[in-house]
Every structure is written in C-alpha cells, then in structure tokens.
Image 1 (spheres, rainbow, N blue to C red):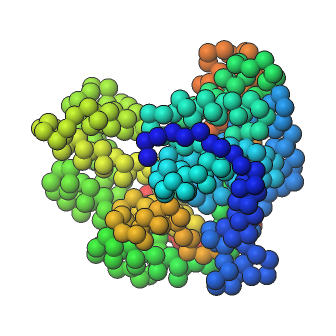
Image 2: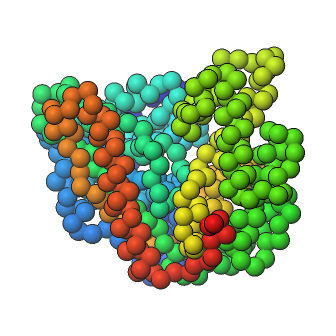
Image 3: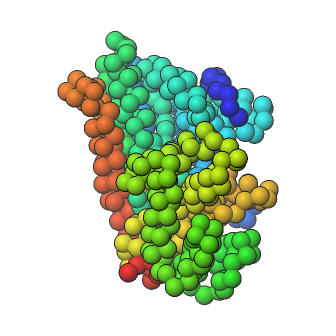
Length: 423
C-alpha cells in the first residue's frame, strides 16, 4: 500500500480495457443495455460528447505539447470510466492518476493490471515519484489525466477548491524540456442525469442506509425529506461525540456551524492558526498532529474525534441550501455521500465504496472549457503562473459546469423535490 511502482503501459491491455469499458461498464451493448443482466456496471446508458470537444482535445495532444486533462470529480469510479472513454477517442496513450489504494490495494495481480493500464498511483509520501512520471509522460506528447480536487465530494454542480497539481506539472513540463513548445491544462466537466423517475430506487437505498446505521427516521415518503432527516440525526451524533449533548433543537445549518466552531476551538489548542484556516488546511493540521503523537497523549482522543468529525462533514456546504428545490440527482448524491462516509465494515459496504451502484439508468453530458496555455502564463507571470493557472482552472470549470447543468436539466426536465435544506 505504501509503495510506488512505475506504470508499465501495455497497448494490448489498454485496448482490452477500452473495449471492456465501452461495452460492459459505460454505454452497454446495443439493444441489451436496458435488460436486467446486461446493464452496464455504472448504469450509464448514453454519453453525450460533442464532436467539437473531441476535435479540440485531439489537437492539443501530440509531439511538442505537454497536456494535462483536468476533469471535475462528482462521483467515484463512474466519472473516471467516462473520462477513460473520452481518452480512448482523443489520447489513447494518456496516463491517469489514481488513488494509491486503488492501484496497490487489490493484490499483486490487480496492481500489475492497473500499471499496464498506465495508472499512476498517488501514494502519501511518494507524490514526487508520481509527479516526475506524469511530467515525463506528458512531455512525450501523450497526455495525463488527473482529478485535481483529489477527493469525491458528491456535489456534481459545484467545483471545490483545487490542488495546484495540474498547473504546477504543466508549468514544469514546459520549463524543463526544450522540445515542449506548448503546455496545456484542459478543463473538462461532466454532468450525469437519470433517464427516468428513480424514486423507488432512492427509497430502497435509503431503507438500507437507515437499517445499516440504525437511524430512527421513517424511510417512506419524500426522498428529500428523508435524506434531510438522516443528516440531522447523523450531525446530532457528531455533536454528542464532541460535546456530550444532543442538538435536537438546532437547525441543520446551526448544527453544521456548531460543529465547525467546536472543531476550530479544539484545533486552536494545538495551533493558533486553526481559527481562520480553510477546511483543507485545518484537516491537514489535525492529521499532522495525530501523526506526531500517540494515544498516551491526553489530547489524542479529542483531537482524533475532531479530525474524524471534520472528515465526515468536510463536503457539506452552502451549495446544499442555495436552491429552493433539489433534483433527484442531488438527492441521490446526498445519500451516496452518507453511505460512503458512514456505512463501513462489511464486504457490501467496501464493494459499494469502490464501485457505487446508481439507483437508476443515467445519461452523461461531457464538455470542455477553453484550454489554459501554461506556456504563456509561465513566460508572463513566472513564479505566479501556478497559482494563476489553478485559479483560471477552477473558474473555467465552474463556468462551463454551470452552463452544462442548465443544458442537461432542460433536456431531461427531471423530477424535483422541495429542498428541505433551503432557508
């Protein structure tokens, strides 16, 4: 798990994986994809990628160009398989970032398989090796795909703060090789929509979650109200674990605020900078302290509980209560977040964490935003190019995603519910 092994790309294996992906995982077999037993693993039955996107991305790959594809990261596994389908069209030899536990955590045979598919394992403490390989592969003109957020937030309409990896590596690829004349970061966004009303599937999964977590909420009726009640009960448990009392009289937003204030107060006991630190930096502070101490320290249990609670609520934010309605897709995302965060310990839970099963068939819409020319930013802004490039990446991703969400929701005119988080 803690080792880094260099990818060993094998064109035959990559071609086989592309065929398996496009037939059994994304898209499905023509005429059979809607039949039980023949459904694609992701239940994605259609992918909408305009010819213009394919042509633009293809032009930005090849000799003299170092290209980094930077997609949004709304779900686990499914979005990566859609990205792989795109790469098979525009950059079949591209390398792809993947979590270290995915590449290394399934045994030696699976590790060899993933390395043959040119997956780059992101292993804590070994990121330099992954970075160096990515830069060298991009300099050959093949391209590299990475999820710049580094985590799944289960919020497909919103792009969180990004890591600087894409812009940083693109800048280095240009500055460290004379043969690289242009270096690009290409923003890519996707939006998944159910192709029918999936209320029955939502309620079925909610019943599993309620039973698995011993939640007291009735799981019949309105799926949005049920998922709201799940959150309220789970946040109440988090508050009880940290503060020793229950929060039944608090609103959802008050519960969230109380938890964040408590975590910051606890973190401030070990570092004064925690009071105003962003969530990501706060999480790193707590993890760093835990690594440097052990259970004999009198603060260890409290700091550890604060770190666990922050991890559980990390992806909850204002996007949850900004609209007066929730689409069925957003309800599904909420319960996938709950399930992946809290349901652990069984084989079924572990399998679902790796390959989440949608509650109904989906269609994916994929688009690209204007590519970012890191070779121009590097010449104009030098040391600031990395920061500016990352800011441009997030801005362009969110703008294109906003347009795509409007387009996809108009196309489907899907099922909506009153948003119980809205106030």
